[in-house]
Image 1 (cartoon, rainbow over the protein chains, first blue to last red):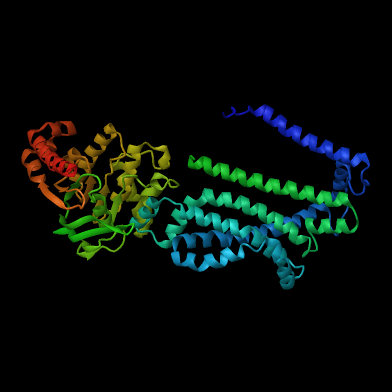
Image 2: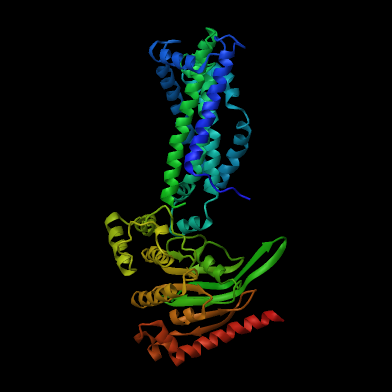
Length: 260
Length: 265
């Protein structure tokens, strides 16, 4: 038997209960004295540290400057992935020969985890902007390409036939038929790709950067400040969530307009 | 003059290592501004005929020519009205109608004039900026017909265009198409399995046999229609009451019935 859907209010209460239990457990562990407070700070210690990081520079910058620097790299890598992934996916769906050329190389490359590009990126770009951008591109690119390609391949044949009988060129076929038809699938891909990109970016900053949230965390580790490291983790989590919420909004509005 | 020509056309499908002969030895000529309906039992290959004229499929033997040129691929000179409408859901009514005109390179002012004209003619006024999913089936098919008609194509190919509509909408659309076809005649190849629809709309009816699809008989309706002046009647039911209509309908029915019986052996 399927349980009837819960009304909205108790649902929210459950979410709140989950968050509160988590914080309570954390506080209990921190206060229990099992480990030193320096290694296991309480939630309020982290909040206090957070406030400090916002006003006093650490590892060269204040927290929001680190975040901005991370977001900048993320933006560049993500945009690059979108600018390459969507057109390439459409070309592969429209022209079989492009598909044949690209697929084998792509299938092999996508099994190299974004983090596995770090040594290569370090060799090529040192701590310049290119390294993190390359790594986030490697994380964000596969989902964009795959979802664009699959979305375009699943377009109902009748729309392609209609565009052909109406004399559309390959360019118009791709931009006015495949692309809009694949938009729901593409946006779903963007969500996955933003998540993977954001994750790989911070990983990259641990190694090949001199600013950013990842860099802040490495410096926090070096000065044995667990609270600083945890502030970085919280910032990553919250920003990642915000990016996802924003894309989910876009997805919902597109689906609503399409009458899905 | 023949605009569409089927010359000894065969179509064989290969499936699971076996050959299915869908069409065999089709010879048919559709003349300029002539409305030809093709009727036949389902699976007789009538839709395949239409798709070959459109360039969406290719014969395995013989040729399909439009304006004396062998059809190799789809193009706006052979506009298709599909049974499933196939309107672009992400484009408005206006943009759907405009799509083909842009391919033809018609300049903006002329596009606007032609679209406004066809919207008026098809009774789509006020719906220019709505999306297909906001329209009823009948209205969607009007848009699909407008999208094809606006191109002023050499031939119009219609694949059971009213097959997905409810009975009342269907009648309205049939009357409208007759009005359109008499006022603004085009070369039309119209696929249907509805006998009355074919007799009401067509100048000639091609009756096909069961698979392998061959042409069983070609019936001249136009001569009868003009002699009996069907077009003085505005409503389809009045035409359908005429003795000459009933006679033709029964004749086509019998031909189709023979095909069904042939299948039961």
